[in-house]
Length: 119
Image (cartoon, rainbow, N blue to C red; front, side, top):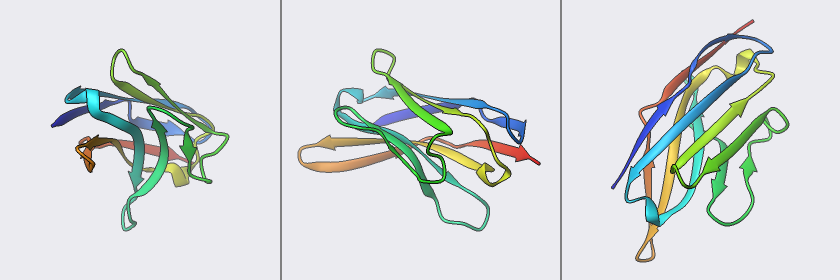
């Protein structure tokens, strides 16, 4: 099992910045990738950015050039720096950890943190 604790959401004006953090604990040695997803009211959850233990980061087209995902492996923490925020970025943001154990994938989710961008 992996436990995730998120922080950093809030209310910001368009053009502003926020930084989300997500600390993982538990079975962290098997982490394959960490990432962020978001879900706006009435919409499906969508990928924002992911960062694997080995390999390149991946971003949704809608956030490329504005958001940066990073990871501190010593702290088992993933960050999402969000700049030039737009009202359409308003959503609940969820941290995700994907483990690979015995050839099987396991996904873990944080409780979600609300990001609201006012126009």
